[in-house]
Length: 149
Image 1 (cartoon, rainbow, N blue to C red):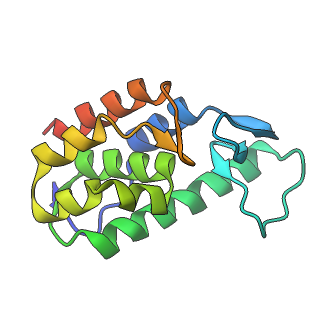
Image 2: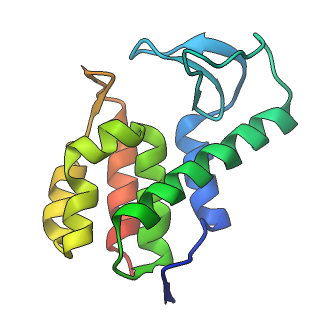
């Protein structure tokens, strides 16, 4: 189904959960960012306890996903399949809005240049200006989902 008002599917949520993992205790990741829950980046003005509950982790996840979907709606006016939507939400969630927009992937998808987008996507391994090689498998999974019909 193609629709501009798509929301992430349960499969898309599971993809994010799989690659982000769950930590109910905040920690500093390999890119130097403070993380809690399912990959929620703790912002500089955000006050978060050292520990959260599973319910709080789920709420942070859904709030973050909503922000990712807002970015898609603001930047892509072309209709997307559910698979493309889910893959793009996972990418934005993982990269962060600013870094994702800086890759050019969203812009290429917006232009309909899906092959160019996935070419860039497979190499989007930078977070917080650091190369994170462990992202390669996640990017492959996202691209495979994006390219499926």
